[in-house]
Length: 451
Image (cartoon, rainbow, N blue to C red; front, side, top):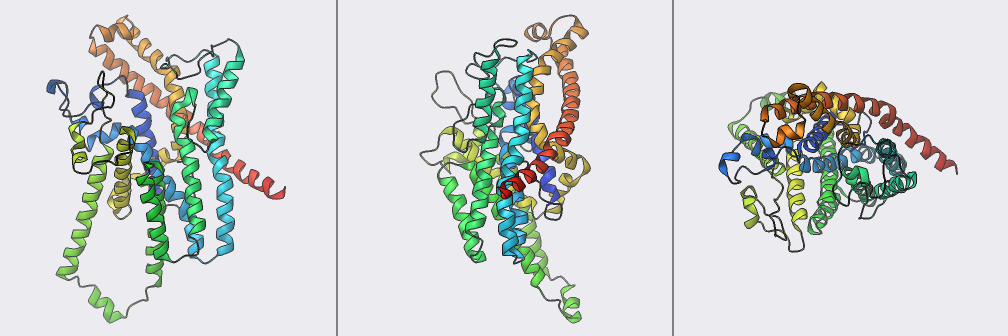
């Protein structure tokens, strides 16, 4: 999610895609639990409260925060391997191994340093009593009270950071439960690096088969996040293979060029069919990304999948998958299909190469890290202040009494104000912390190499 290879080796649309995905995650956490309609299925009952465009693909993608983390994982696998594969393809084995070992060391610090800073800021603000959003039972820092004994706060902070850098499952992320993705990023990155090392000297076909088998194994084991990483690696390998084949083509004779300039009916039809298939695959991937979260009903032991998941009767999940793995696997497949199509369709990549998308890409990691802390401090206060300023009654009274106009105005003001705070804060953090973590990673690598 945070790796940024050199400009020469990076496909910039990946940065834009990562940035847009981070914005969708932030909007998801901003609205989930407060706005019910967008997160229900189009087919839910009663019909009078549903049947809205926002509940169906492709419109639903703007609130598909759960699926966007799978976009992160595919993009990470894609981006961290591109530069390494380029070095390997150029035949510079020594440079490849040197770059690989350097990436392993720096990746850990590249991810953990900004996280440590954000966790420290969050816990200081929590201790100072600025949080205005209650945690669910069992979450947060039980036993830690603002302006109370600092030791429970320190213990909570230490547990949080250890959970993030822990390469095993089972995390206790306390104030920042959305950072469950960071251990996954670390483990997924290490799996990709190990695959690159182990398959560095085999043939191209063996490499494709090896990465494909690793991806299938992750799917089989119910590890969709690592399936996403290996899919990203496979995309990078396919790109490198296509580039090598293109560079090895000899220039044809002028006569051949003249003949080639006259497209035949069969070539045109075949090209259109391939293009149509790619757009269809993208649409299918987008549909899977937009699938709603299953709903829990009172007394049920498992959640209910809405009719949007109709294909589960045709493609049943493996018996050892639970409902969450089932959901995450199909979201991951959607991310893989969408990105696979975008690789070959410049029109789909173009929006993510725009200046706005590139700006979001620059601040994506910082935005992902800090948005929850901003919400927990500012959101309820802004909603209440706006309601009091507009109507003289507090927000929760207006909401419970059905004064939807006041609620709507409060959310509009909150969206604009908090969105501005997030953009400014994320930009500052990207410059002051995120970019500095790159330098720290290089410094740590030099220190370790001299020991």
